[in-house]
Picture 1 (cartoon, rainbow, N blue to C red):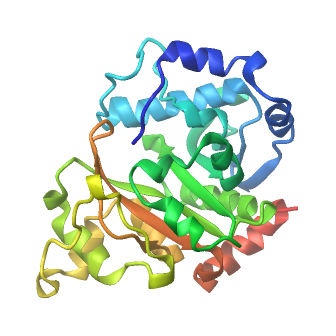
Picture 2: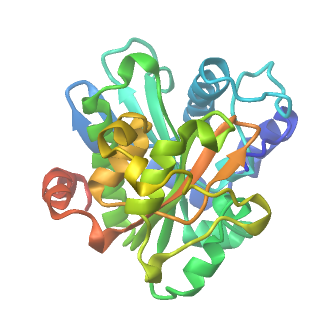
Length: 295
């Protein structure tokens, strides 16, 4: 569930007085994590940059994709919730644009570490999937939740995706992350509208037993909606959102069941990516470039 705080509470929470010293030092230390041409990726360095990322999210999720803004004070036109305070915000900048850095943000990912989630009482995804059970089965692994991924329409290109993955790869190496997880979404709230794509995921892309995770019982919707003989891999992949296809290419697997998110108007599936199982060709590709920024 992508529950949002009232805007007044967000203003209070993001005020300098409310930010701990560790957060401030983290902002100050935000060095580049990747670069392709004029696109640069790094963590947010300031509260202004977090606010600007929230504005980008609002433009994509609410204005473009039609998320329900009933829980937001839309006067500020920002997508914000309580997790923004404890997450690292991975940002893509087009350095060729005029103006201050926070006005050059064209894409964003939100990164929630296991340590921060423990302090906050859990991960964002806990309301949709049984993540706590998965973590309990792997006590030696450090989990990282990826979320709130969005890129402005004019920057939705292979180059932007690649620079984001440069940043993610450098980040997981810096922080010794063992497992990446998070929700990924189909637009709309009717799973049957995505029957072929969801069925393909359920039949061909499920997690192995040791990494299995299930949607919470009260929100569980079946993904296996068509018989295997009726599912075409070609048309199923063509119907999938680019983000999900990108995760699959890297080597991600999919949890059991999907969840309807009525606020964001999406059908969510759960992504599991143990770092050691990421396809070798992507480790070579992103690792070679990302190691430049991973120290």
